Each structure stands twice: as structure tokens, then as C-alpha cells.
Image (cartoon, rainbow, N blue to C red; front, side, top):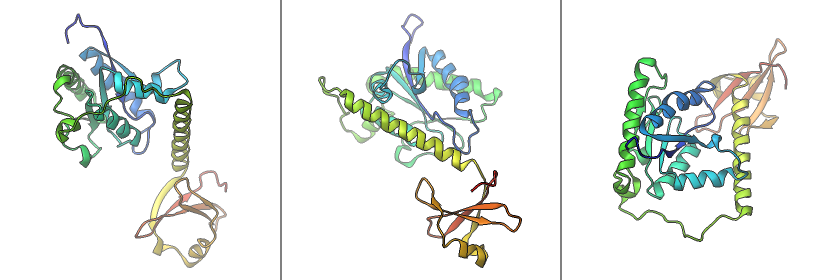
Length: 263
């Protein structure tokens, strides 16, 4: 793209919230110091879903940008389900997208055939500039070859891309429902993250529990958000331990010290 070309939008598909093993604020740093500079260098104006303003129908706006933004970049770091879902939509319509991920995220088998650029998640100053340049070059190249995309599932499968009917629009009722579902999911994810990170967690085999502890496991107290069982044990010193019974073939439990000593 030449300097005289108008700046085109690049929709950024990436994790918004930070989950283990990433520290709080990690993906904002990735966005601000890696993705945004790369987009600017390539001549694109990046926009992320949390930057969308003045709309009551966020899901509808995200879908619109997935389908209509001239360019997109997708960060698969952490294998976030929402990110994979949005990438699938973009790919099904054979829209240009540059895929990146950090070094600690393994490649995903189902899309392993697609080109994916790796970057160092530490964002070291001696490496980030070369990563910015590589991503920028790939963004420009992908956009310029948008009519003959080889880095595409549609191309790999030799199938026709999906198409929207010209008169097909989402009703307000549908967009309100989609937005409500998205809001509930975000609240669920935030609550689950908060509960998970409120405790100091270690895992031990079920067989290593004492008979007294095993006896306490017979009385369920509450359930985890994903359906697991939580029991409380009182230690000899009066403090409490929260035990989550794992639903695994080889039972393992998480024994967590309650930091607040509250049931």
C-alpha cells in the first residue's frame, strides 16, 4: 500500500482479558506495543472490540467488522475460544487475516496448515522491533493478495466461501439477545477468573488424603462454576481449606488455603 492510499481499518481479534499464565494487563501491552505499531507501519488503523463506541449492540458490531473490515489480525495466544470463533467466521467468508501467536502457545492442529507468525511474549526491547516489522510486512502482503488468498481454510479445502444475502439483517430482538449472551459470558469468565485466582493452589493425588479428610469429602458444600464439587476442611489450627474434587479419570483434587479464612 502506498503512502497516498487512504488508511484502512484492521480489526484486531485477540484476547481482551488476561488468564493464567499471563499477568494482568499482558494483552493490553501486546496490543499497544506490538499490534498497533505493526498496523500503523503497514498503513492500517487498528480497532479492537473493546474500543467500539456508541453502540448498544456490541455483538452485531463485532460481526459486522469481522465481515466488512478490509483487513484483520488474529492473535491466537492462549487459545482463547472467542478468538478462535471469530477467526472461524472471518475464514469462512475468505476474508484476509494475518495470524500471530506467542512462543508459549502450541500450534492448533485444526489450523496448523495456516501460516502463523510467532512473537516472544516477553516483548523484549531487542526483539520487538523485528516482530513489528515482520507483522507489518505480512499485513501488507496479505492485503495485497486478498483476491488470491493461499493462507486460507477455504483455499485449503477447495470450497466456496460463505456469503450473506443482501437483504439478510439481524433484527433488534436478535442483536439484543446476542449482546445479552455475550455480556453473561463475560461476567461468567470474570467471576471464574476471580475465584480461580483468589487462592493459593496446589494439586495432590486423592489417595494422599487422610481418612479424616476423606470422610469430610462425603459432605458437599457447593459447586464450582464448571460443575465440580467444593468441600471445606478445618485444619488443626482452625484455618480452613477448600477442596475441589476433580472430574478426571485419575482423581486429583486441588487443596487451596483460604486466604481470607472465610467459608
